[in-house]
Image (tube, rainbow, N blue to C red; front, side, top):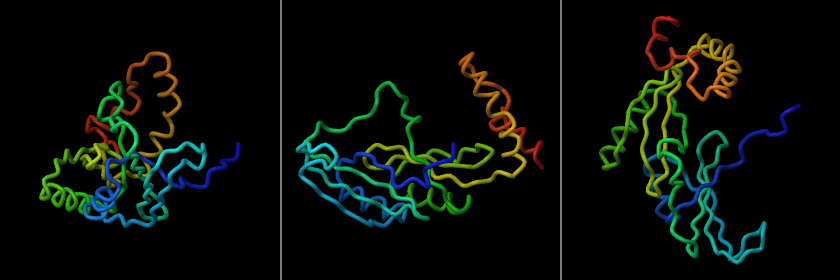
Length: 183
C-alpha cells in the first residue's frame, strides 16, 4: 500500500494549565506558541466541554499541542503503564546542544536523567510541569548500524511475538559492543 500520511500534523496531550505550559516550553525548549484555540463545545462531537487548545512549534513543521480541560477530573496517568514508557522524544542537533540543555534544566531545578547511550543516539530524560516525560535525543548512528538493524527487524519482532523475551539480534545497542563493531 502506498503511504497516505505525509507527516504528523500535530500530537496533542492534556495539560494542567495552558498558560504555564506554553511559557515552560518556550523558556526551557525554545518552542514558540503558534496558535491558541478555545471553544465551549467539542467541534467533532458537539459535547459541551470548554477547553483551551495550544499549539507549539517543535521545529521543521512539527507541532506539539496541549488541551487544558478545566471541567474534567484532574489529569493523572495510566497506572498500568510504567512512568518511563510513555514519553515524547525530541531530536536536538548534537550531543553538545543536549548537554547544554541538561545544564540549563538542572540550573532551573528540573531533575534530569542521563545522558543514556542508546548506540543510535544519546538522550536525556525529564518531566514537564504536567508530568509528561520528555526525552531530548542527539543522533550518533552510522549508516552501517541502521543497515544491521534493518536486516533483523522482522526476525526480532517475530521472535518476540512467540516468546515475549528480548531477542538478542541487536544486543550490541546496549551492551557497548557497537563501539568495536561499527568503527
